[in-house]
Image 1: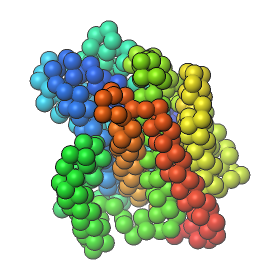
Image 2 (image 1 turned 45 degrees about the vertical axis):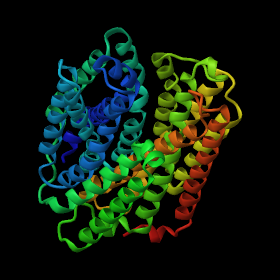
Image 3 (image 1 turned 30 degrees about the vertical axis):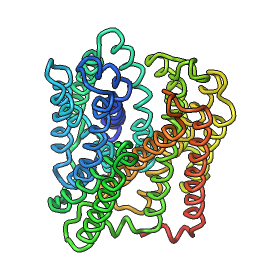
Image 4 (image 1 turned 60 degrees about the horizontal axis):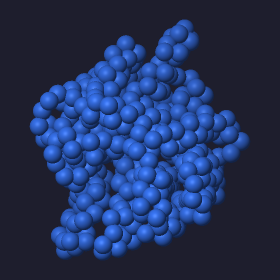
Length: 466
């Protein structure tokens, strides 16, 4: 890449990468505030409407490693454009006056876009100067998380006035803009790269992930049909074990499992898994608590739109942390940043557990969560990419995002199980103490994340290079 190209195109490329990552994250999160509205509009149960969120997460988790492998080859630009085209078509299906099944199909297509985040990182690493690419990759990671805070209040506001199709219409508009942006700005991948997708491995991984995320989303299955849930859990474990063995033996792995076994990468992924559970747990606890009516003896009875505004501190402080992290990274190692950020999220749990009697305290807890999540998300790519070849950037980060998706899903499931256990037989809402119990579990998850990161930080610098 010439100096002239760097100077002229970098100014356009960086905002394009950020915008695309933000759009796919925000659009995938549109299901969260629209569940009740979808149930009313399409005359389905709340459990069925919940699948408008679940199916996007499922398709994203399955598509991410496949897109990550395709993004490692010479057809990365075509992969990005084709994926965004699928997202646009899916967005159109959510807007058209079609039956509920077509809405689910559209949401599944939108979820595939979640796999683009890792590809945006690969583009940044290949086509920007090293210092600029590191900061850009950190911010791409952050906006992929805080996108939920951007999409939630806008979707809720549109749904209040025009129903769920109006909110999904916003998704169609921004995804169409993202496609045009990618068409005009995405450069071709460097020459000499190739990427072969192990189709059999992709199918086995998809099956394992589908079972894991299905079991995390269907909480009632564990209470009503425990034997079936256990059988499915064993099947998921077996599929993932078979996939791991096949990846080690094949010459064209979907994910370079040997690279994933590197202590720095393995430690980062363990931290991401435990941290993902805790981070998403606190996010769901705060939003659910804020919407609980006063008749429950606690809560603030906020509407969906106002509850969405509670996420603003999360997004704002998350972005601030993302901007600060690359500067702090010059003085503090990546693993220590992960540990510090995890400790901050743990502080958010402590704040929520001990002080939630007024809305200002909830906003404070959400702000602390956002700052911790922003710092954690910004530091994570640097830890992994420090021991990853440029050509494997998309693949390595896509695996990390699969781990994050599973952690988020389990965090949501754990929160639901704890609150369900704390709900009396004749009560609609859980006892206030159930939220304290869930917060204590979250503190434990973040303690594991902090300790894992500190263990990673104690490794000698020479140990963190391949």
